[in-house]
Length: 201
Image 1: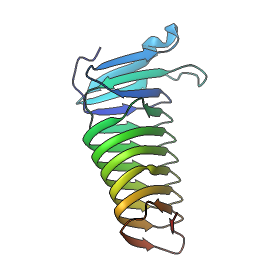
Image 2: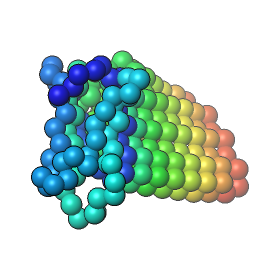
Image 3: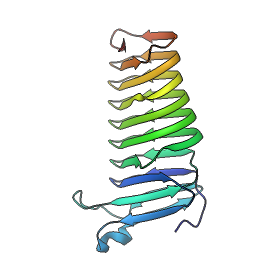
């Protein structure tokens, strides 16, 4: 049961979290019966934190399904996997992945802010008016299936970003970062140093 309102979802510690936008809010934990009490879902200051009380083996099923009416921020860290079961439709959304986590979402937003770091992966599809994205430290933002009108993207330290932009793309790549862009944007503002790459696909 969801007893308190939340605007942010934070998944940690290798858990598999499935997100569904719905008229009804709920949290369902699916795992071995003896592990149910080890997976904790709690709302603190508007943040739904999904984590474990202690280490659980990797081979164990650790599925948490969260249904929500609206959301403003989704965070994945510490090897967790976050997947949307349907299209998430909101005005503005902040996404953050770090520490080897994975996030795969289908979206319909006006403004989308993304940050990936430390070997994490963020896969996006759908539509947005404006995309702001930054990837660092070997992380990957795969957004060629996300149609954006305007994109402002920055990549560094061996990270990769792919985007699909219709109107204006501002792209900055440094320190082994790699940006690939699709969609034939009307205007492209590129800046890079010798070890950064920005490539039209």
